[in-house]
Amino acid sequence: MKLCKFTLALALVAAACLPAVAQSRMSINIPFEFTVNGKTLPAGHYNVHETLANDNATWTIDGEHTFARIMTHSVESPMKPHIPSMIFVRAGDRYFLAQIWNEAHWGRELQLPNMKGIVVAEGDADRYVEIAAK
Image 1 (cartoon, helix red, strand yellow):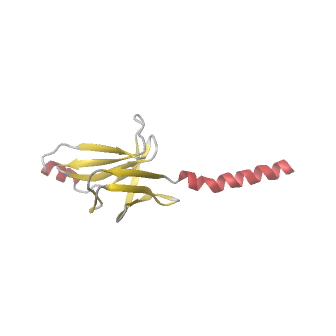
Image 2 (cartoon, helix red, strand yellow):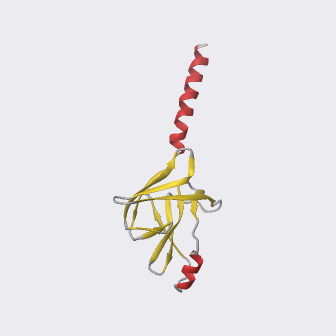
Image 3 (cartoon, one colour):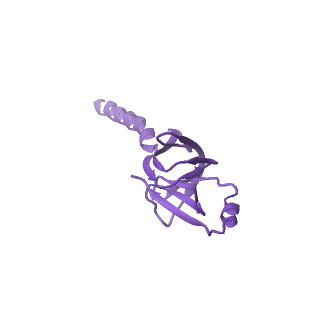
């Protein structure tokens, strides 16, 4: 009976810890100004995390004097594992946040409306810049 109670208590503790483990958080230094959902953020140090523990679609990017909240959808990279990082699309001298990789094969992708037009209009081929988290 004691073993049964101990096992149940251990299972409850493990279940209570799962949301905290599942929540992703990373710290990252971005060396350039970048755009997120139409908002321009300055170069600097940012903390990137899920906004709500049970909602991995909404992410927050917190800087020293600014922040942005973004809606994302899941993206998979079955062949190439990623380190925790953020990927930007460069168009001329402008950078646009495109993806957040918080796991080796699973990440989050932002909607980039009109990105193809911006890249083509500035005469720059699609270029991706990946910045690793700390």
